Each structure stands twice: as structure tokens, then as C-alpha cells.
Image 1: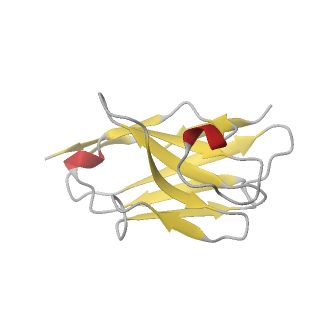
Image 2 (image 1 turned 90 degrees about the horizontal axis):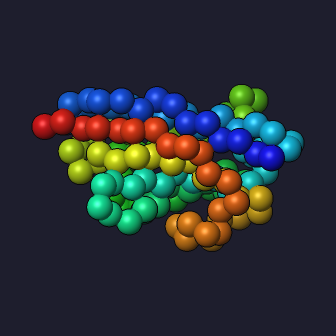
Image 3 (image 1 turned 45 degrees about the vertical axis):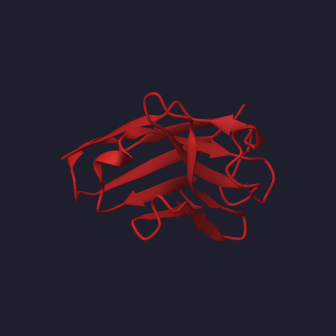
Amino acid sequence: QVQLVESGGGSVQAGGSLRLSCVASGSGYSVKNGCMGWFRQAPGKEREGVALIQSDGSSTHANSGKGRFTISRDNAKNTLYLQMVSLKPEDTAMYYCAARRLPYCAGYVADQYNYWGQGTQVTVTS
């Protein structure tokens, strides 16, 4: 069984920064071998994709965070990151890490991901 554990959320003022982490463990899963991504869900809204990174290291970022959010990974630590700067109140949401067994991503379709973390809350105040 693969486990994903997120951390790094918190409450910050608008314009602030946070770095989210997601540690993968179990069943020999390596962050470098699968597609991984960050999603978020605000109260009363549907879950939306934030950023993805494929096994080959190529990444994509949703328009909502483009230029402000950066997805990356540390293969040695088996950890996925999301660096967020210039945060806005509309970024307030629960942020989830997701992993796919396949090396390539298939967009932000939630049911294409095999494993999910429990989420970490990000709150941005104005």
C-alpha cells in the first residue's frame, strides 16, 4: 500500500509564501517513476488540479497558479513539493497530493490517480 503524507500548510497573509511537501512511502513507490500532482478543494467547490509532474520531470501548472506555484520533487527523499508564492485569498483550500502508477500524467482527472494523501489546509487572509 502506498501512503502519501502532506505537510507544510498553514495560515498566511496575502502575498506570503508556503511550501507544501508530500512524502511517499510503501509498496516500493518512487516519486520519480510515476506521475504525481497537487490538487485543491475549497469549501463548496469541486476539487481542481494545481500542478503535475511526470516521470521524465516535465511539469505543468494550472492557470490559477501559473507564475506563482512551482511543482518539484526530490527523488532521494521520495518527496513531492509545491512552492507557492504571492498567495491570494482565493488560494485558500485543502491541498492534496496524488500519485499515479503510470509514468505519464493524464491531466487533472481525479479518478486517474491511484493514491491520495489526507490533505493539508492552506488559508490565506487578506
